[in-house]
Image 1 (cartoon, rainbow, N blue to C red):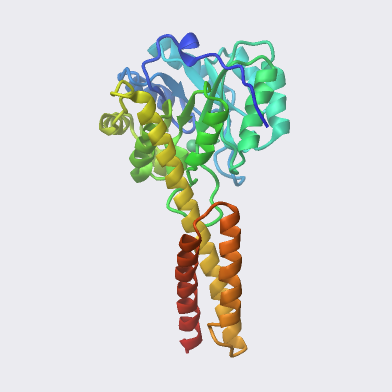
Image 2: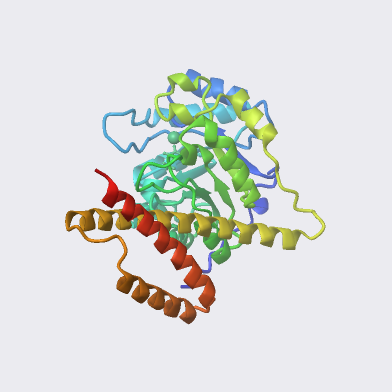
Length: 363
Ligand code: PEP
Ligand code: MN
C-alpha cells in the first residue's frame, strides 16, 4: 500500500538545527533539582539540541515509578527558561496531550507501547488537530511497519506535518544481548516509503545497558539516521527508572566525541549512501537467516528426541531425497541457483543429522 506523507523538511522548522538532531535528558523527571541539574550540564554542549524527560511513565509492570505527573511540565518550562533548550515529553493519552500543549512544550513523542495502539494514537491526534505541534513517534513494540506508518498517517490527517520517527528497537521474543533488538530493515522500509521523514535512533531503549550505547549509536549513523535520543541523568545509579542505560552528561559528551558522523560530501555521496543502505539490508537479512537457522535447529533437536524415544535412525534417506528435491524446485521458482540450493541444504541437513546423532548417542 502506497503512503503519501506530507512531512515538512526538518530544516524548515528547526532552522537552528546543527545536524544531527540530538535529544538528551533523563528517562523520568524525578525532582526539580535532578531535572535542572541534568539540564544545566547538558546545555553546556551545543551538540545537545533538545531536552527530553518522561513526565508520565508507561511501565511494563505496575508498582514501579510511574512518573512525577503534571508538575514535571513546570520543571520542563524552567529548563527552557534557564538553558534555552527546547523541551519535549512523552504523551500517552488525550489528557497528557492537552496538558503538554497547554504547557507549550516544544515537542511531544508517542511511546512505543502507545504506537502499538491505533486507538491511543487517534486519541492523541484528535487533541493535536489544528496545532503546529512537533510530534515524534517511536516504533511500536512489535516489528510492524504498517502500525508505525499508520501512526504517522493518523497524525498527518490531523494536520501534523512536523514529524520525526524514533527507532527504539522491538521487544525480543527470547533473551537477547539488547533490551530491544534493533531492526534496521524496518527503518529502511519506512525510509523507502517516506523518504522525507526524519528518523532518529534511541540507543538507550535498544541497548538497555550503557556498554552497548556506543555501538548502536554508531550503527545508526552508519545507516544514515538523522539523530539520536539518549537518556542522560545527573546521577544514573539513583535513577528511578532505566538506571542501567542512562549516562551522566559528561559520559554522554564522551560518547558523542567518539562517534563518527558520516560525511555526506564524499566523492559520490549518492552512491555511498545507497551502498550503506543496501549493505545494512544485507546485514539484517543475514541476521534473520541466522535466526531462522537457529529456529530450524531447535525443531531438528525436537525431532531427534522423538526419534530417540522410538528408537529410529537419525538419517532417513527417503525423507532427505524428497526434501532436497522440493527445496531445489522451490528455489528455482525464485530464480535461485540449483547447485547453490543443493549444497546449502546438504550442509543444513548434514548438521541436522549431526545434531540428532548426538541426541541418539547421549545416555
Ligand atoms: C522513554 O523514552 O522514556 C520510553 C518509555 O521509551 P519507549 O516508549 O521507547 O519504551
Ligand atoms: Mn527510559
